[in-house]
Image (cartoon, rainbow, N blue to C red):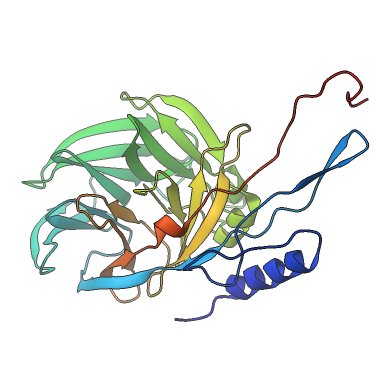
Length: 326
């Protein structure tokens, strides 16, 4: 497995934190980075917090790989098939053999411009779509019948929060990533939305926004100059996010308060380069699927998600008389 610049940085930061005020404890199956903790100590009536430790790094193991000529933007998966997504095409493959079976193909001058990640819900495939990298940003959800691969529906966001890159169904709601970028498109003078404006949005059954969160800047800095390309809810009830280039997924949870998702772990995914991901939750042993653009492959991974634990946090307390902060 190749060594990424950020991997050494994570280990170095963990070592620095270990030498300071907080002792870091690794978890089974993780790399040398330690479990994230945030310690609190009283100094007079003030709560003093040490810096949060770097989240643990775990290794994903390749289970299977398949040649897939459309593996350029994202992936969706169900019990029997996987769906390799390209800008204007989606190819349905047999999950056991990798054999391509059917393909949706949008016309070069048609309304389908830039598809990304997808999610199978029932007998329908919901795919994130945008006009990337044209301005202003426009986004929509395109819907396909998984049996016939015919286009059967659409939901337009018009000009919205950014460029829609992924979509998933979880806990009775739709979840989506709206990406923004530091890249300056050809012929433009300004960044394409700026990476720090990227959002994860929870939506109701009619795709109306209910809540939204930002992504920690440490992760966005790893996405730059691109953005959040993939997202999928894992069997552990945590959200896994990927960028555009690095072979790693960031394990997130919705925070107890505030507007920023909480980063609890990182999973190394060898052989892929970011892009769209999809958890296969259909069997007894869930697997995480991704793509290699460089090799035109679809790859499935086993992930030690049971080894991930949420960090213990002390973010507030209730004080009585004589303890009030002034």
